[in-house]
Length: 116
Image: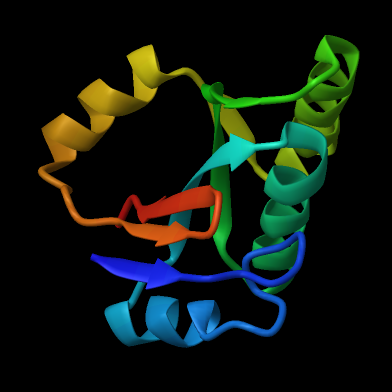
């Protein structure tokens, strides 16, 4: 398990996270953590700008304000998934098991794991 200590809001800024992802050949990320509208959204946008496909696991992220979480989820999937997609753990876990994928990375309080 690789642990990335992130000093900022996103997992990519001032870390070796992208280096580790590239070394492992990761192209798709599952994103979880807190808070949805700050650290999670920042990481997804950073990842999307770098060419990663992102899926936010909706019930594995949280906010202090439900309306902020709802707005963030809507922004991520707007315009056909402009920044990524969303799914619940009930949808994600069986897909991971079916794919036989089990390794992952943790970046500060934002957990990211490869889909492929």
